[in-house]
Length: 345
Image 1 (tube, one colour):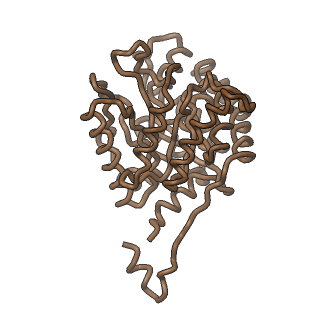
Image 2 (cartoon, helix red, strand yellow; image 1 turned 60 degrees about the vertical axis):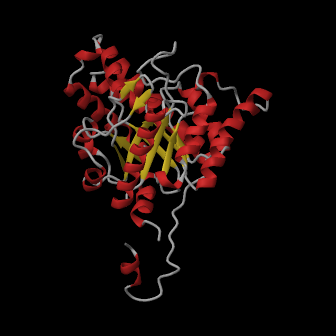
Image 3 (tube, helix red, strand yellow; image 1 turned 180 degrees about the horizontal axis):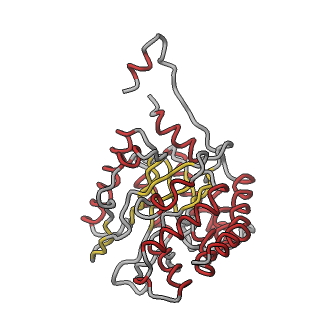
């Protein structure tokens, strides 16, 4: 039988028409860097209270435009859970941003003292995990990442809460493009992105919603103009779309810090391939923080002007070209009083 908690949670993430127009506010290092730039200081000097203030401003300025928001438990939840609108869905981060960077690849883990159960208890509508993943990583790293995702999926099934999986390809520590920053590699390989999606689309991983990166670097993605280059790019997005259709997993796009016009182009390709929305962060709110923080009025004004305009363009593009999601329930076998209570194990 359908896990109704998961289905209702998914409905909470979308708007009334089934479009996922979601804002990510769980960023930790990228927000630290933005605050540091605004203040003209080193990242290590950014305080806990600055992080709380920035996250609260972002929730205050953007929550009424989003179908749901992604918050982390260490900063965003204590900063702003009290002002998150009741109608706005709540996705909560599980993974620790401080990953282990080994010679064979990156290893993810959960935030200390944090769990799927706690996310469900605080009223979360979904659990989100970022799993750094490369199909060509060391075998022991691949096994760890796969086991980690399986473990989270099992807990999400047990607590009947949607599992949102974010996948990111990353540079190896010995590569010329190496960085620990959350930035898109200019030489990203599409096959690594596509094959990562293919692996975690298997039922054993229990993914309810994919949060995916563009298979090609956003800044170099051509316009969808029918050219040979555009058709080649579209084929990579379509490969992801086909995997998700075959698995029955809806997918949305992350912005990865892309410039607004680049992210809109990513969405145009993604929606043509069947994506159902976005879960974007820095492309919407980065400028407001790094240009105006800690001036509360200036940050809110920037969010009300530029941030809201960017969000509206993304929502308009989504409504015009994305495929809406709709819930599905199966009560065909419920034929007597008490059957549902018994069957819903």
